[in-house]
Image 1 (tube, rainbow, N blue to C red):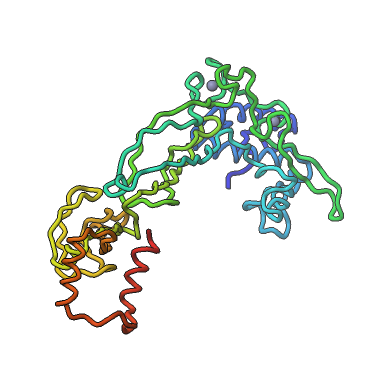
Image 2 (image 1 turned 45 degrees about the vertical axis):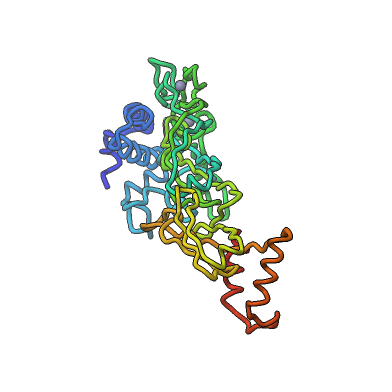
Length: 371
Ligand SMILES: [Zn+2]
Ligand SMILES: [Zn+2]
């Protein structure tokens, strides 16, 4: 750690006034709002810390004698206020870190948008053009918050530290506490001429148009995180994130179970008995379907890889088709005669309680609970 006197560029014999003058001069050069380089910000902290110590008679005396007793010397502990802050989480008196003023730049807020998509858009993914009402960088001041051609100036009250130090009497004796400077609100600088466009905020509200890729396989309730697409922060701070909350609209025919698509096909009794081949139109085109002779109600035909493209991993789910055999409800005289004649030659037992079939109910559940 550099010597506090060297940091401020003053002699060891310097008066309090000389120390104050030296500090003000350096603060004007190095304050983060005036000089945004990381190097300057580090030096500013050192300079402020050195000033904190040397401007206080007691702390200066301790420092001159080789640091605070009992706390390992000067290394990292310049004076009482630092020790106090170390004990109390660096937030003594509700202020900041003491040495560093608060930055005007802050991260912008996150935003949430709800998006409704159709089930067929989920099969392969889709694109959406969206309008969001958000905060964007002020183009007049480019986030500096100052009217064009002007700059922030170091606060006269706290001399750029953003903190006001006060001695408070307590059971332990006098304790130095710091609280944010009321004049500059802890920034260490004030803006004499705020940007007229953004009223000194560095950002303005605007409607932004954007194209969004919605990947295949999304489901209701999923939140897509678009990093850096939220609001820009105050004074041009980094953007927050944009979250898109997905809602998949109800479809009258097709439903979904994970990456599988479920549907019901009604098959006339005669086709179920004799079997048939048909072509049906699913969400992504034609599906040839082979209905075998003797197909029963509640049977499920699985068409591989015709479900939803997986959001994570590769490949697609399946299309699962539940069969519903349709028994005729109205027969004309001739049809009735044929069925009656068929009944005379077809040998089948009368209705009876059959053996419990776990599989049948599992299939029924599969078809109806997920619809
Ligand atoms: Zn502006
Ligand atoms: Zn101030």
